[in-house]
Image (cartoon, rainbow, N blue to C red; front, side):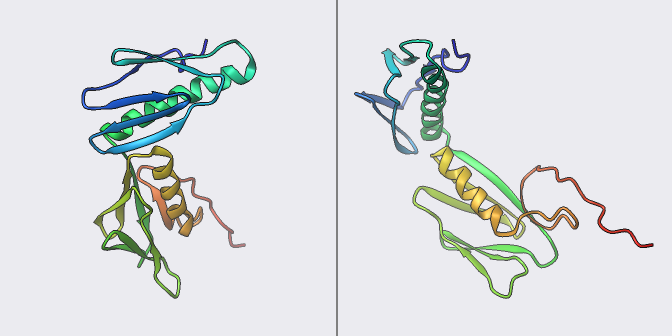
Length: 178
């Protein structure tokens, strides 16, 4: 049995968990999310607890069991608390500014780099070198943060670029003179 898949999903107060066939809709104080559950996986609701079941021990069923439970738990967590990725910028002259709901980066290029906020995502700039990406969909928050990080990846020689807060980089020595 999957260690993740067999755990029950506790539904907190103020969250609606609706199962219609293989479609699950979770509505909470921060918004609503929808997800299709893969076909061999079934859901059982018992009051404020949802159990994810698999029909057999086939390889595909086992792999989808934990995945389905994790996706549903992330939906419940997202509509209650939301998700956040913090990023920081290092480098002389590198900075970020908020313009309405969007961000504008100065990353050493000859032009500023604008980033529009996708639907359901908000940006918060705390200092010119620190900002965060927030939303209720964990996958979308992670993808937007990864796309922003890709604008100027951390350089292993000078440690310049956009990185996740607390990310440890391995510094390379570079060439040595003779």
